[in-house]
Image (cartoon, rainbow, N blue to C red):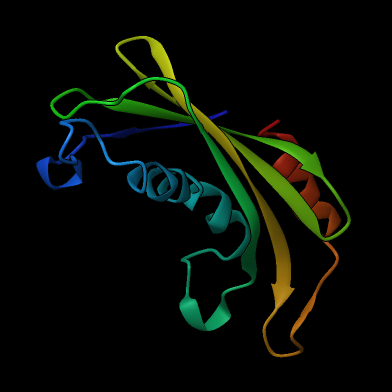
Length: 128
């Protein structure tokens, strides 16, 4: 499992005083950085090879400014050319949001999905 800490910024709050619901998907994407690094060491945009197919977020409790949020990420399903990142957001030892993102290993030059190699699959398995 991967863990990263987000410090909610004042600008991420909404008129109701809690973190806006558009922020959590961005935090989850930030948490996928270590996964992106597996597929593209150095994360060179000219060599980018992972795209988002689908994502969802369940908002469980309000998230507040001024208190750190831990994002926990693990790999769920691994297919032939896709995999699922499963995320949880925790604040004050409480699960406040969870979600998933289906990612596709993608060849931009050919504009098609590509088979996840054995080496990449082994790295993803370590994160299950």
